[in-house]
Length: 199
Image 1 (cartoon, rainbow, N blue to C red):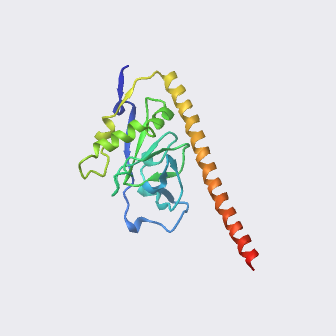
Image 2: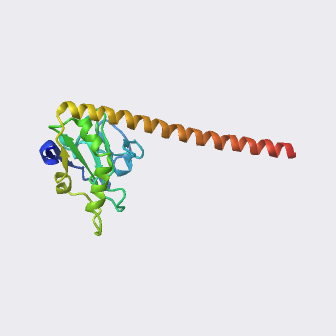
Image 3: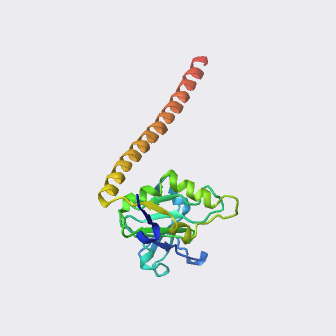
C-alpha cells in the first residue's frame, strides 16, 4: 500500500507566545482562552486552569478549529511530549507556545486524529527522543510521518470504527472510577457502623 507524507495532508501551526504581563485575570470580551499541555489528558481536552490573554496576541490561524489536533510539543518530561487530543468543534480558544496544532487539509480529520492516539504514533515519538535530551517535537518530526494511503471511504470507515472502540473504553474506565468510589464509600459506611456497634 502506498504511503502519504504528513506534510502533504496537514499544516502545522505554532502556539501563542505571551509574557506574564499579557495574562489577564480571567475571561472577558477581549480575551482568548489558551490551552496548554496540562489541558491534554487521555486524548481529551480539559478546561482546567485556563490562561487568558488579549485577543490581539492571537493570530486568526491560531484560533482552534474543528478537527485540529492539539499536541504537547515541548515539556520537561519526555513521557508528556507528543500527547495529543482532537478539537471536536470550532471554538474561541487558542493554544500556548509549548503546544502545536496539526491541522488536517487533504485527509479525513477524524482519521488523522485517531492516528495521533495510536501506539504507532507513541512509539515514533518515543523513538525520536531516545538517547538524547530532546524534549520537544520539531516540525520536521511531524512532517516525516508517513501514513498508509487509504481511500477516503476507508479513512471514514476506520475512523468511525476506532471512535466507537475508544468511546467504549472510556465508558468502561468511567464505570471503574465510579465503582472504586462506591467501594470506598461503602467501606467508610461499614467502618462507621462498626464504630457505632462498639459504642
